[in-house]
Image 1 (tube, rainbow, N blue to C red):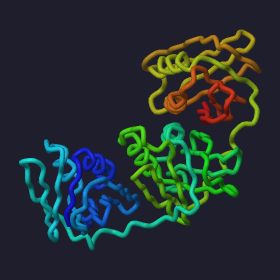
Image 2: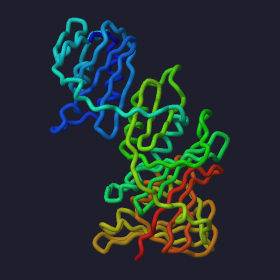
Image 3: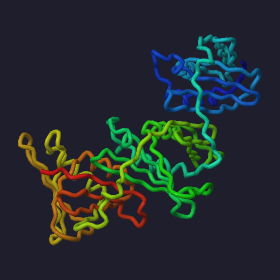
Length: 381
C-alpha cells in the first residue's frame, strides 16, 4: 500500500475519525484507524462498535492496500510534520510515514482484525441544513437522561414528519424532570411518506456536532447534512465524512401529552434579564434542591424571583415583564434546569407559562415561529 497527500488533508481526515478511537485493553484494534487505499480513493475509518466514522481523503494513490495504525499516535505525529506533502507506505503491519526530511516507522495490527462497519442504504434519505441541525442538537442534547437504566431516554428522539413543504424533523430529549423539543424544516430531497421515529444515542449526535464544527467551511462545502435510516442503524453524511451508529431500541415516552395546551398565567420578559435574576437567586437556593421561587403578580405587572437558605441568607428580585397576564400564581423550579433551557434560546425575549405549582412550566422563545419549547417540572414544596 502506498499513497501521498497534503499534510492538511491528512490532518483533517484524522481529526474527523480519531476522536472515537479510545484505549481498549480487550480489543486493541479499536485504538487503530483503518487506512484503506483503492484505485482512486483513500479512506480512513475508526469505530468503537457503537459508532463508526469514515472519511475520504484526497490524495494520489500509488499502490492499493490496507493497514491499521494507532489513531492518536498517527494524528499527533502528522500534526507535527513540517512538510506540505506526506507519503505513507505500508508493508504488512508496519507503515513508513515520510515528509520532507522526516521519516518514521509505525507498527500497527492486521487489518483483518478490524470490525466490519455496517452499511446503511442511502436510497431513501432526508436532508437538513447543517446550521439548522447544529442549532437543534444544541437545544436538546443537554436534556438527555444520563441514567442508562432507562435506555429509551438516554438518547434523542428524531421524528421525521411529512408536515411542511418538504417535511419536518423533530428533536426531543427528556430526563423525566425537563423536556426539550426543537423543530427544523427538512430540505429539498426525500420527504417522509409518513411519520418515522428513531432514538439516537446522545454520544452519536455529539460526535456529529464535533465533526461538523471541526471541518473547514469553504465555497464548495455542502449546505446540507444527509440522514438515512435502517432498522437498527442511522447514517449521517456530510461531504466526505460518514458517521454510522446503532440506534436505541424501545418506545420513546409519549411526551406530547404532558405539554400544557393552555396556561392560567404567562409572562414575557428579556431573556438576559431573567438569566441574571435566576443566577442571583441561585446563590441563595438550598443545596441539593436548587430551588428558585417564582411569584406572578399580573395585577401589579411584576414577576418576583426569590430563594432562601437558612445557612446563607435570602434573595429577592422583582422583574417587570413586557407582558404579564392571567391569575396570580406561584411555582418553584430547579434553577439549573431553567438556565439550561434559557441558554439554549437565542432570541431576546422568552415566554414563561404556568398553570399552578404542581404542573410543569412551559418556556418558549417569544417569536412567531414555534420551533422550540422547553418544559421544566416543578419542585413541590
